[in-house]
Length: 299
Ligand SMILES: [Ca+2]
Ligand SMILES: [Ca+2]
Ligand SMILES: [Ca+2]
Ligand SMILES: [Ca+2]
Image 1 (tube, rainbow, N blue to C red):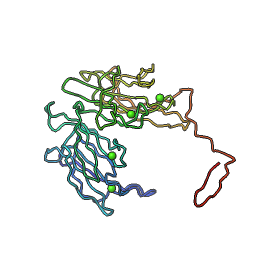
Image 2 (image 1 turned 60 degrees about the horizontal axis):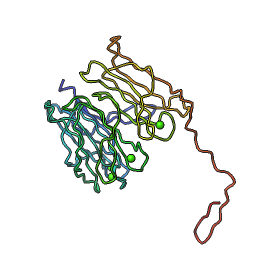
Image 3 (image 1 turned 90 degrees about the vertical axis):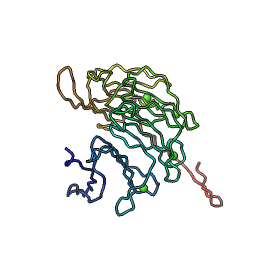
Image 4 (image 1 turned 90 degrees about the horizontal axis):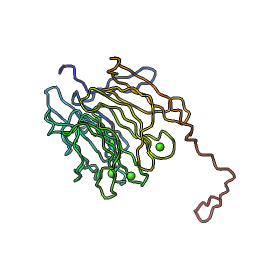
């Protein structure tokens, strides 16, 4: 297996397809990769976690210098089965990061951490977030107070978990109570499915024991998360994504996974039939402007 491990960028050459680029990234498996502009120079940098060909667990950040990528040192933990999302969680204009994962097979190595970006240097935040691996993380301001919150799932020492964490406005987070089952593997995402302006939750994952799974949507009713009745299959080892495939301003879903009842792998799209649309704002008409000593007034 090890000789077939690769990490590579493929450049989109439009009609000619994709060209593999000769950048020297570390080759990993069981990991994650993402683009992020951590230094705000408008060039997308690369973050990679996983297990390399020598079986060593790594986390590496590569800065995009305009011609190629150079590795930069970070205080990040080396992880696999990891999940992370870069997000400006302290509203200061740069991308911070939350990640979870594991550094060894031992469940004591499971870890969840936040690092705050200070001018391109990351500092570990003194947060006591429950440690999970084999899960996912997603940022979203579910109570619309202007401070990003997150939802996280995964396997912990105490079983499969799902936690909504509320931003206390001081760099710390507290678990928000919600009656949502714990899941590992799979994915949890924020999305406003009913177009009421509040972020709802969709999730798929394995329940305790990993023999049964779920796909479920929970509606955000002013911070109370209420299960929406849907006839969605109980898949395991799945993944889910949202998107408005038919352009009717309602978010639809696509998911993949294994259905243990039928013993079949599935990939299904479900169309959102909620009766409220998220219409585009109407263009204001009849505006007049006056120009007064370098100030433009709109009326
Ligand atoms: Ca950059
Ligand atoms: Ca920030
Ligand atoms: Ca919030
Ligand atoms: Ca909603």
